Length: 178
Image 1 (cartoon, one colour):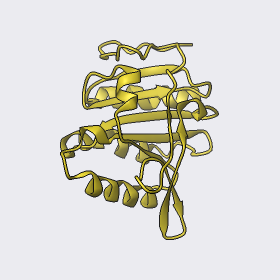
Image 2: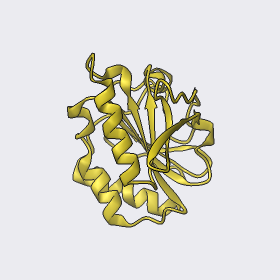
Image 3: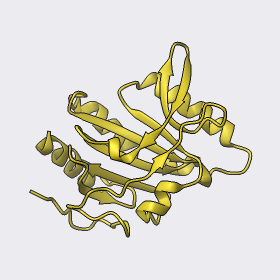
């Protein structure tokens, strides 16, 4: 069953019931872009492909690398943590759009993301240096939440801050798809 949640603002290229549009990011340890992976005490940057986001239900948080955008849906991420959704069936993916960062702050942003990846190893953090996801998915705001099922089909999307009702609906939807 495909769920369309009333009142949500939809991205131009993200359609409920359709496979999420794919894009790839080449991992680069020198430029610190791609999917982060904890390696010993450090971080390694690996290739990332949206096509690889199958097999689990996932919340994808696409966030502009600004302080205001990164704090928009703390309530949602806190609620996801509190919900204790089994990590063998669910994963949170955070894509940071570094193209939106203020000039000269990229290194600070990357350092914060690396620290978060080390602290939350069950989540996937990805640095999108050029805003590829923003362009491919047609996101119109600094922040979007996309929920996909195990096959990579979009089951919910919102280009805006989630209110408490939205958060409950998203978590209920995630649980129903496990």
